Image 1 (cartoon, protein in one colour):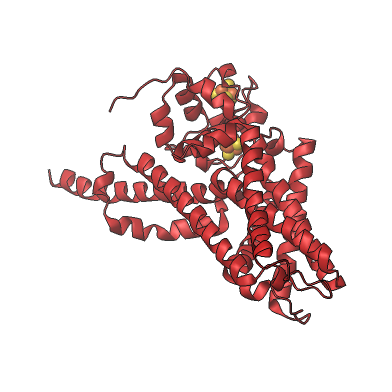
Image 2 (cartoon, rainbow, N blue to C red; image 1 turned 135 degrees about the vertical axis):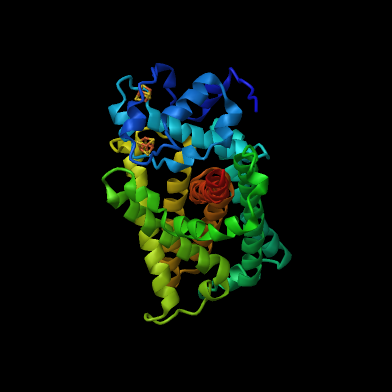
Length: 386
Ligand code: SF4
Ligand code: SF4
């Protein structure tokens, strides 16, 4: 198979992060020190070589960038300060944009103003819908003698909008993941011959890595990072279940008793989201941790939206309990605007993509390895017969 050389690849990659791999003289120190490499995945050096040689297609066919968890050990020890860890991160951003054929990913990564405009536009959608609802109902559904959120914003309407939004976001993610699948599996000449059974047998790999992201445990010595990430994901997952699956019971004007599970699930998710999104913002400001030394606008998006969204969610709760109708409605509207803006801009380019593509890459790699293993058994048997 021949590959095209793209002489602009390095230049293009620089639009996705602080790439300094011109400085690299291919000593291989980074690969030697990386705790996650093996013989079939000698990153980051192999990825750096592909960029230097302009082999764009080969880069897109690789899963290696997704196998790196950004511990930063390679950058700390690089003798030329070529920042290989940030190069891997930039390659991942670039790949996300390439998987996304709509072109949104590339636009959002390259232009801060495109992200801001899109966020504003998405945020305006719930505001406009609420305004239309109140204009049509003659503003009679703004109850001011008590807090009545479900009259201000009927839960079934809100739930329907949330479900439609999630269906659209899900479609976008699945389409991009399928594109990744085609890129990664098609160059493998034997890929077409991989039986469906192999894909099914390896599904457990996909489930385990999605739920635990356990490769992270081997990335660097700081296991706290993995644990914090796990807590953040658990909080985020619970909040998604409450909002997408249980909104009818979650957005209610009834005040649940203190022992009610929905209340405690909501409290757990809120505390976890507030603490870890806040910590991520502070760490990006400080730039002390290797993972947060370089930040692109897309890296700020998720923690900032999440922190402000969680904070406004807490205020809705406080105002509701305090019995302040108008402040509750105003902050509720702001909260919904922030959450919709976060999801609609974030899902295509942010942490969601990492959360999905990483385990998917591990899965596809495991499928290839198992298929190869199964193919080599008859080969050996026939070799023995000769
Ligand atoms: S990135 Fe640094 S450590 Fe890695 S091969 Fe290049 S010069 Fe060596
Ligand atoms: S950041 Fe860590 S996991 Fe990624 S390539 Fe460098 S050493 Fe390996």
